[in-house]
Length: 81
Image (tube, rainbow, N blue to C red; front, side, top):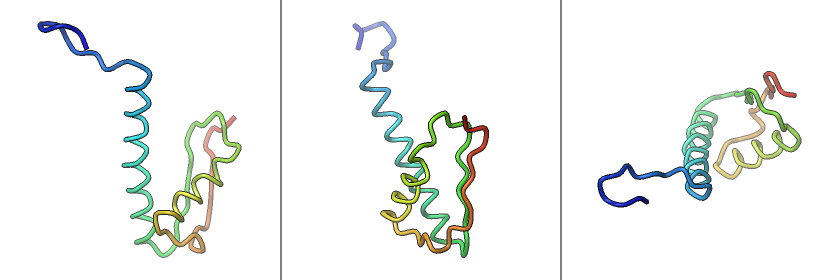
């Protein structure tokens, strides 16, 4: 952080990673909670440039958070390259 009278900056790489991880945790919990409430659900990953292992990661995380993967009926990757 900078001295008094200047704006604090949170743009360092470690702070950026912490922010991304915090957002990931919040979003993943919201998705898992909605999947648990639904009879069936699908997952769509938007604009990802690296999808190798993405489906596995999504399924593993949803399972860890208590979602029944037997109810997963679709996976999609919009604009994936």
